[in-house]
Length: 565
Image (cartoon, rainbow, N blue to C red; front, top):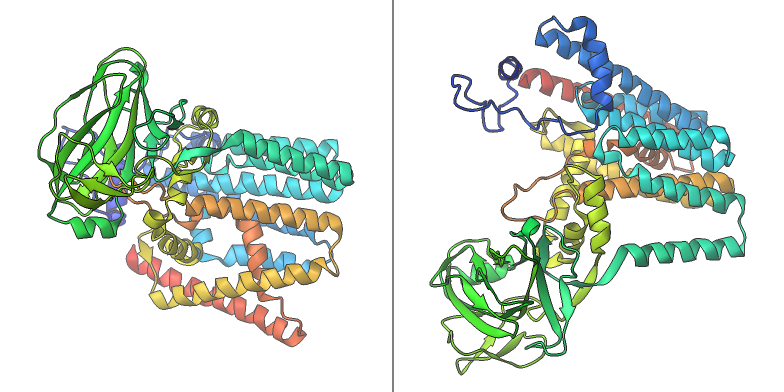
């Protein structure tokens, strides 16, 4: 079956611009198919499988078209869900519900995704169903029908794809908002604020070590304070046990620092000790040539160790992977990490000028420490280890590891470059990127799309402020607030998918299909923004212009798809 599937993909130029097809003339290796989905939740694939039962003896192309018909049917359902949601949200505004449904029907990239064989199709439909149920719950109030609707939709999300597992925390949010709406008073407000504060304090911790990462997560806090620490009070604790013998902490040098050090020799020093005497691997400066360094014996008292390296790469990071052979739990402690330019004495520690370890004297020469937060004195917010453990158990194939992503978000100097790239990719792929993200139209059309998106969201903010003060009822305001939160959460999670930007991972720039589960509130915001003009003639012409643009974009997209394939 793999050969038949790959042969059809080759025949239709699927592998063009993405590295070429696998070699089908060999039996020495398993033929590679892009990202098998066998570990994904099964709901969408069950629907497709049911449709293929009568066609199980036909060729793969016929089955593909049948599967795409299932997706096309779900695509039409998503448009009906949009019409229904906006009807309940704004029952007097028939114009807006038609605009939202029409926009979704004419959005090229959305149509392309929703007529393909992809479990994102199922994720969009079940999450749209969930959002509609939440909207009814907030507008109509708590009832048996609405409660069953929302709970059932949440279960469908958990059975469809991990990109819509966010329905679970949103279920808790909509429940709290419903209770607030129906029994609003000062006491309920205090309970709500108190519940949110307790939840935040339970989930998050302010004692994580800044600029440092750990994988896999550990239940022992990575940053620990000790009065007898060699430098300051902060230390880094890496827990090693038989199940996680290769656990490591790592720290990335900034690109400008690495550029300055290219080809130069540096000296890396650190204080190390452990909860019991053991032999560990020394610190590694990845991206540099080691001058010396073998396994190191350490005891229960801090001892200083130093190593020389020569920088030989444009990506350099410090890798603390103790890796002990002991079959018992051991905690290895690090403090006073120093990376100084040039050859420094290996047998004597530096004298730091301050507890943070940023500058000092080593070998009778001044130095500036090239490691950020070298003595682990700076703390930062992070997710508590037990929460990370729970999330890893609940979610298979985790693409969003919160403990590492929070560390990467706060490591702004290292990761900020990715956000403009990712935002542009998300906006352009929302409108018209096809195939496996490798079929593009001319850049002019993307520039126009970006400006239309900016204008739409600015207009949406103006429209919401103006409507909330005049025409919208309190239940509608609650529903709009929830839809806005859901939209922002899903788009932000999608934006953060490239993180934590480890150099050994392929940098993944996300596309908008991961955020299409909130296509309805996104389309509503854009359409409402474009039609936010107070003058009727301008409003009418802006509507006409929007749909003329969509028809032109569809024509350009069709021409590009036909010419490519």
